[in-house]
Image (tube, rainbow, N blue to C red; front, side, top):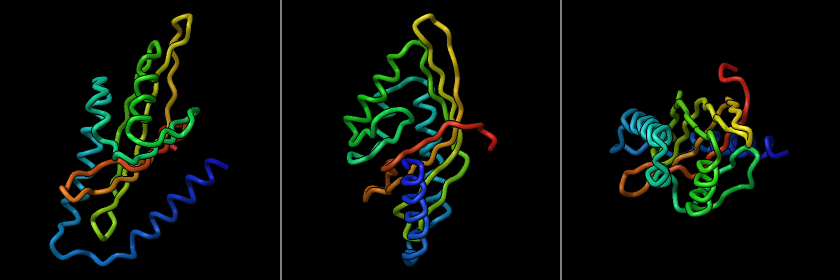
Length: 159
């Protein structure tokens, strides 16, 4: 059910991307590349374990659908989730943005890619899982991109 809800939300958002007229003053390809670069910078901060910087990429009203956890709503709840995960022994999370798609309006887009999450258990054994993610971004009035919704699913990275 949850997977169906996420898929439906993505279909609605992607379908709506074609509804706005393209603003003449916006270079959509440059904005698309800026969005992709933003996700790459976010991934670099996460790989370094810089939790405070990671939190700055979330919109104030964002929602995070992290596998196996309740939905975290708002930057404070998401930051608490990130801090809980980071405090687990052996935890690491890396991701690689593979694609950025932009609405014609230039103020909404999404990135997608693959991730690898590593965790340890009480005995010190470390295991890794891989999967795919989608992040829906909104462009603020100041031109910065902020993640509004993020969801991920475990599975083989090449599927």
